[in-house]
Image (cartoon, rainbow, N blue to C red; front, side, top):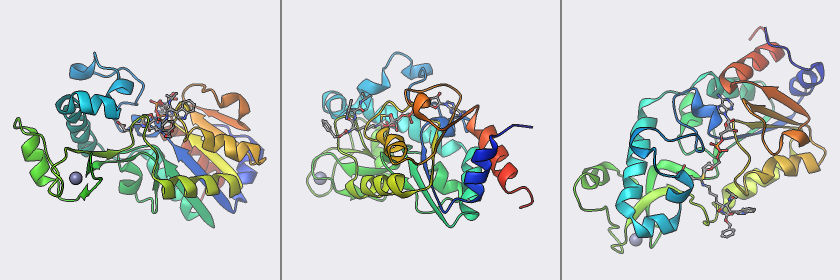
Length: 252
Ligand code: BJW
Ligand code: ZN
């Protein structure tokens, strides 16, 4: 039986608005490799920080597409895990709940979370590198990708790319504003499975903390933000979160 601080139990049971920021660690137990852990197999020798950039795409669009195609396939084959479901449960007990994710894998949505704020886009979507036009029918794209022809925009002829946010690019403004507002106005904040290294997402917990809002970190490791947290729940999110929800709302 996992132990939780009484004060945290009280705060969660009586919260009016909980805001949650998730990162790659919440999908780790589903079998999605985290961003900063060693890439496996074919991608072992590449540094993800150097592939997830506009410069990498301009320099070698085929390589970048192949990396995303591999990750798309991997993500399509996995399922949400108990951590994703625990957040759906938690939301059902609270008057207000804001779920902010840096993940591009749709696993929160697939678990049943509604209105997920996606800060870094979604790997299942595609847009034009030049004009930004979004593509909804992916079928043609997958076919093209395995020939030597890279997929191109119907409107401007530019190269298509995954609709995710790369280093040096701005985050979707509406999503970021909503995330900031929730982080500053909630009464309990969770930072789950994120290394808290990538800005501006990593500043959301700091925003909450600077407003005097209690903040909880759920992670298997310490992060640069651990020292500032009110509570640290050290362990895999897929174990910690279901146990916490069961402890606060035992009979439901
Ligand atoms: C578990 C677990 C289990 C494992 N249970 N836990 C200010 C200061 C310094 C730099 C900057 C700054 N402002 C901007 C920058 C530059 C840059 C940045 O932050 N760089 C840093 C690396 C230094 N930021 C940007 O470029 C952003 N844009 C921007 O700021 O625009 C304005 C601007 C433009 C131009 C100039 C200046 C300003 C954009 C950032 C976009 C990030 N995109 C990516 C790729 C998305 C697509 C893809 O996936 O390919 O998003 S990078 C990557 O990192 C991905 C993730 O969402 C993101 C965060 O990673 P995350 O989720 O934290 O994963 P990991 O792997 O790092 O950590 C996993 C964690 O889980 C670990 O802690 C484990 O311990 C834990 N864990 N198993 C619980 N079972
Ligand atoms: Zn275009």
